[in-house]
Structure formats: structure tokens, C-alpha cells
Length: 112
Length: 114
Image 1: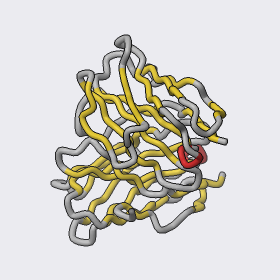
Image 2: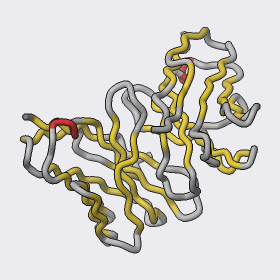
Image 3: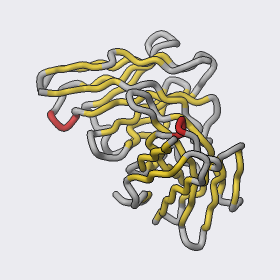
Image 4: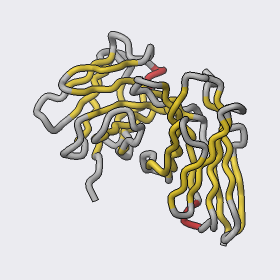
């Protein structure tokens, strides 16, 4: 089941720079997309979401971009901070379904 | 800050034994979920629960699995006869609103089946 794909397993950036995390999906029925982050020994924590009727959503340092034609979304973190170091999961849901479909996650390391 | 709590944090069991994983969702939340993550794999949806009944379940959630909310606060996942492949981290989550995807997850219960 590869409906949500995070093709890069890891990313390392310098503190203060931009982090760009990418996610692709194959199911055209998905209409709601989310990013979660996860620290070791903790459960995933909701970060930001976007509906398919939008192409951008911003919350502080975090911005999610959605390109429906390319079935691609990305999370931008500006500026990156060492505390952002975590595993980031992209997730999606289809209209009317409770089920979130997660990607495999990507480990972000922000170096001081 | 309110949080979802799960017990036990780690359980080791023999194949074929019954296991109950417990969760206390955030108190004013109405929607409850179980997800699991097998080591090295994706987080997978198991079941959603609302108004004392299952609202949606995945193909993973077969007859060996059941959920209930026995006392209005706890939300439990029971695996009747565990298999080796049930070894995973099980996450409970709750939400105040339906279909937003904005779930509050617990720290997880690691199940090891020997």
C-alpha cells in the first residue's frame, strides 16, 4: 500500500535555514492532508493540515503547499530550529472516511 | 495540557494469549481511534469509535480484535489470540471533531508477541 509516499527517509539542515519535506500521493479521492511530527518514545503530534480546496496553509513557521495536479504536497519550516528535529509524517484522508493513511515518515535533523 | 494516556507502555505476551491495551482519551473528546505501527513500517489505521460503536475499521481489524469503552473514560483494544505479527506499537488517539484528522495521540503501547 503506497498511497502516501515520502521518498526521502531523512533530511539534515542547518539551524535558521529552510526545511522542505515532500510527500506524494496516488489516491485522487484524498481531499484532506496533514503533517504530524513524532519525537522518540512519543505519539505523533498534529502539526498542520490543508484541505484540497486550498493550495497553501500557513501556521507560524510552518507552511504546507498542495499541488493537486501533481498529487504532491510539501511542508516548509522557516526558520528551522534544533527542536524541530523529529520524524515527520505526511497523512491523508478521503471524504467521509475516518481513516488517515500515513507515509513512512522522514527524519529531520536540524543542526545548531 | 490534556493528553491521551495509554497503559501498559510495554507488554510481552506469548502467542495465543489475550491482550488488552488501555487508553484514557482526552475528557471532552468524542471520537476515538486505534492505530498501530509495526517496526520499520507505516502507521496503520485499525479502527474508529464513536457513540459506543465502531464507525470504521480496516481490513487489519478482524475478528481477533475488539474495542470497547466500558466505563465512559477508558477505551480498550483487545486482541483475543495474539499472533507473532501482532507485535507492534499500538497508538490510541482521540479527537473533538470528526473528519478533521487532527488527532491527539497517546505515547503508545509496545506489544511484543513471543
